[in-house]
Image (tube, rainbow, N blue to C red; front, side, top):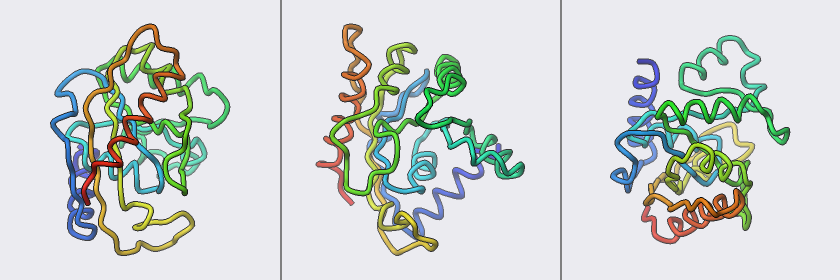
Length: 198
């Protein structure tokens, strides 16, 4: 119930203050597990994805965000779980696969971390591993405007229009390597960046 309340409230706030525009919601699977692969330029990106996606999604969040007892409890209720970056965190990997196998959605940023200068050329192979092992579809998403609404290092919101587009499922072939799957996800995001309308 908390997730649905926060999602509804966030969507109303983004719509009223930032003119949130959502495209391609029909591309989100009606049932079954799926990976939502998005670009990442602002701390707002996970919130926008959660507010715009018609299904509930899970998130990986930096492990230090859970040190505060109340905030840790709060984001866990919003389907977040901790991950230690750049360590090959076995717990986070197992938890990701468990939630996908339970027919849930999982948000993943193929670039790994926020990118200030647009999409990077290469993706991290983690999303390829998760897609290959779980055999769930990857749905690309491209967010526009969050870097202007809340730039890196900013303490206050700026006026900006935010848009998000969900793309069609990316075909995954068994013969593909984890890296190749990850690159297909990133390429899908890049294609959306050329077609999204603000």
